[in-house]
Image (cartoon, rainbow, N blue to C red):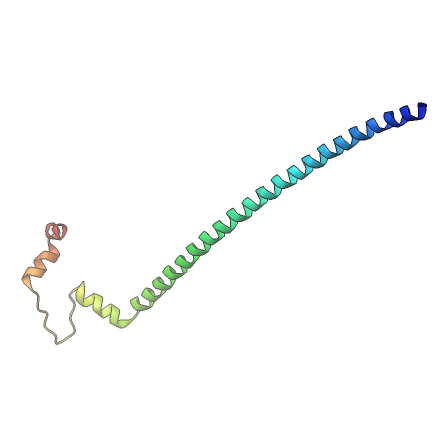
Length: 116
């Protein structure tokens, strides 16, 4: 009967060890689940930011291309001539400049431009 008591006494500490191990294992698994969930959220957030930034980059590249095209046009003789004729009212030698008084008054009068 003494042997039976020893077995009972030996089993009790093993159950406590098993409970401690289960608690520790459960805490570790819970921690890992939270860690991976947080990392997944971070990855999704970064991918979303990457997509937004790539769209902005694409828009900026389009704008850059438009500006480069405008720059090429500004340096062309045709553009310079058109601007000189329209804005500065310059003419080529031998040409006659005809000015419509009604449109000329509207262009020079700031009050008329505000109303339009």
